[in-house]
Image (tube, rainbow, N blue to C red; front, side):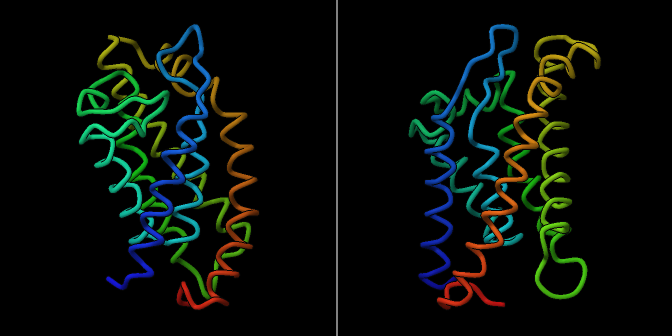
Length: 182
């Protein structure tokens, strides 16, 4: 891996860590509203399947070893075993699946393909997050969706719209500067 690729991976891992600190707890759910999903969308859309997934893995490893990079300064292996831990697992798989969607078709993905890729990523995050939430809190599917998905959809869709618009511009600029291949 080239130095510029490592720098981009580290930059996006750091971006997700910073956005994770933008966290608003909800009184009815153990899952806070955070900025992480915005960073996850940007990593996948700008860096692509492999580097984007690697950025997520680096972010998760930083948290696992004890750096306070998760929501509200959380860290450690225990974070993965909490009711909200499934969403963390979902970030890596979600970005990988997003990358698969973005690679389909000819040429650079436009806004539509980016939005579909991000929506697919979001579904993966919700599925893994809700499964762990339901399992650890002994919830049925309806309760799991009410606590772990429905309250987050409007803001996550807004993040998707924002991330798709930003990523088109940033990806183009990085390509022109020689930091990303076509």
